[in-house]
Length: 264
Image 1 (tube, rainbow, N blue to C red):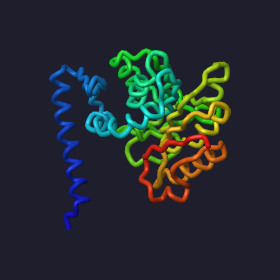
Image 2: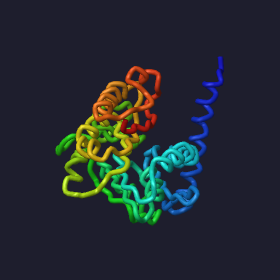
Image 3: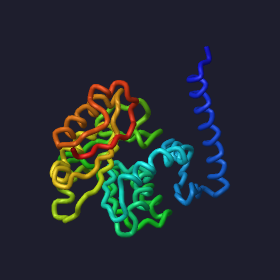
Image 4: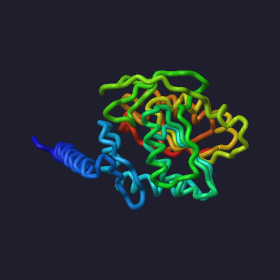
């Protein structure tokens, strides 16, 4: 039986196929230098097999409609925000415009390949209030193996197994506490999207979090993220934070949803 759910899945897949063909055509017509404008937010399309770009470009309006109102409510002009797992810069670009010239964003991306795209996208948008760091955040200084997903760079991970083809990349990790140790900066919000590495990021940010009580905007969910998300919730509770979900709720929540954690 062809259910509505199945129809939506097929329709969504066909929509992405059509958009990908259009982007490829435009890419070659633009002599392999295609920049897509979404209401004055610019993203370059590289046509290198990374469908993460395709998802952003195909769903930018939807993602923006979902995320911008939340971020605009949580963040004020002049705030200092940390973007852990910046990827191609979707959040960093939006946040940089919310905090304005008097604010600052610290964006961390461990993969050198993805980091180069992040730099490019920020330059395209003439952004000057973002501090870029080509490293990941965890609980201590170390070198780890990043499993970079060739098809969807946003699913690259330090801890989880991958279904798609991967490229292993040795990446530098530091902790948020160490990075800001000699910087007298009050952190207002920390966004964390690290594909299962969230607990380690939180452990390495204990001093920052317990001292400044920033808002935490964190990706949690069930499925393959069930165990790490459960640990992250426990850590946040120990730090004196409240979330709209409990550990017991995770199994019913799809992986990859963002939640706001606030100090009690």
